[in-house]
Length: 200
Image 1 (cartoon, rainbow, N blue to C red):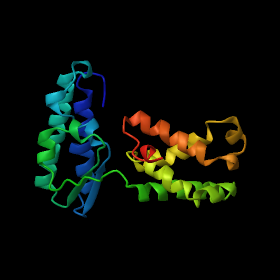
Image 2: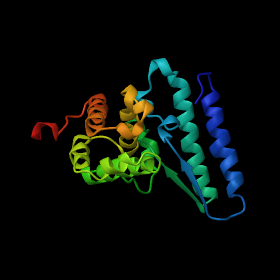
Image 3: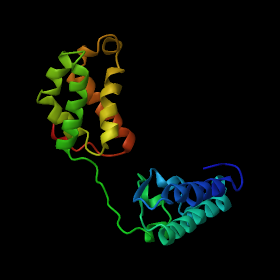
Image 4: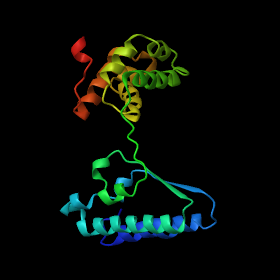
């Protein structure tokens, strides 16, 4: 999206109205992935005055027009759109979706696997991290990570490594307390309550 007047609409039109149809012109089934689609299909009813609402309206209109045209002229085109901010999506855009699938945040068991696999990946070079990955502490730390998404959970391991000079110099010296502290900080950033801390 562009801060310049009218540029957002033009870019969306070029992408969805010209480039994508040219890819689909051979009639071969084609999948188009629109990652973080809220950047182009912004809810017009909530457009901020600071974000040039006229430009937001025109860009969203361009998305809707292009989708309708592609649906009519290229039935072999399949759009997959992703968003972490579904409330920011325009209602007219959502109404054009054949299916909407909500992928919930990972449960503690999935969080445990993410933490363990990240540590095990690093254990190739720092074997002590393998022991931490297999310890019972990971289950408690995963419970405390409730409310984090998978990417954020993986990042927590690297944040834990960066908290102390000792772990920066020797990642193998990472402790469960380091990891728990990093999870605590990450959860605090999200504003989610730490369900497992109350149990300790």
